[in-house]
Length: 137
Length: 221
Image (cartoon, rainbow over the protein chains, first blue to last red):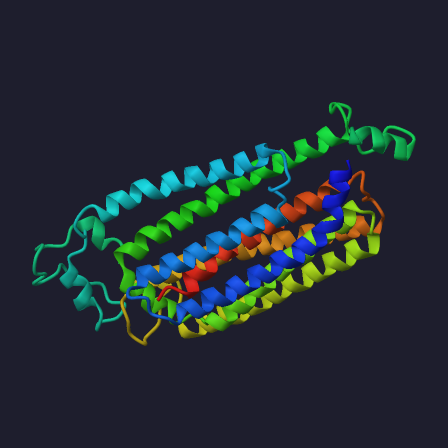
């Protein structure tokens, strides 16, 4: 009981501190976006990493998972695990094979903005564009 | 244990306790579990969009970089700050209602509403700018400034993700208005503040999703 009361008297200060850290991390992530770390995917990984740190702070302190019965955290984390599975398998599929759209098609498409390409005339390595990929345009 | 203190405080069985719960404590934690289950379904709903985003970003990275240059980072950052501050005032409202501070509860809820409204105002300016430039999703894409045609897909993700999130902000504002009215009627106390707590959880999830949307949409390069 005294532990509970102690948590209450402290919590306002903890919330202020959490907000301060969240705002600082927001500043860092905006600043990092102006720095080129070599490739856009490295920048994206850094931004998502900082976002995960911020999300953890919100979940632990603002959403009280730190002091809650563990069942709530189990529900939350299992939804994230299933989201991870959902993300993982399509990702493996996309990144473990050659591009479905021939590279030449995408380069040619740039000057004629928003125009649908006819079947790629001389799309170097792959020849004709597969029909399902064309549907994305 | 604490349910006994509640009973002692009120001198009788609290009116809010429903008969199928052992005590107020059990009723409170059951409500929270239900809310967390709902939040899990929310995460999975947005998750589908995040997965689609991740796949198409990998296939058309240059369209994503070109598309995100049309978004205003400063406006996105201001909106992030608004939502983080609103999450803070929300948790302060939950804290105040759980410690019987009625006016502090109402004040913090009103601050939360103000930040949420600020978020939507900025979103309105961003959207009207995109509409004006023809930066619209899919076949409505009518931008003539060049760049990869798959930008239309980027703006499809942009409008669906921020639109669904914006809808959640509007719903959240309605819920916060509802608990502000209830708080002003003095319906909450340290013994019973479940609605404030659950609306708070919902609001923090809205913030949580924006924490990911902001870097993914505005900070691609």
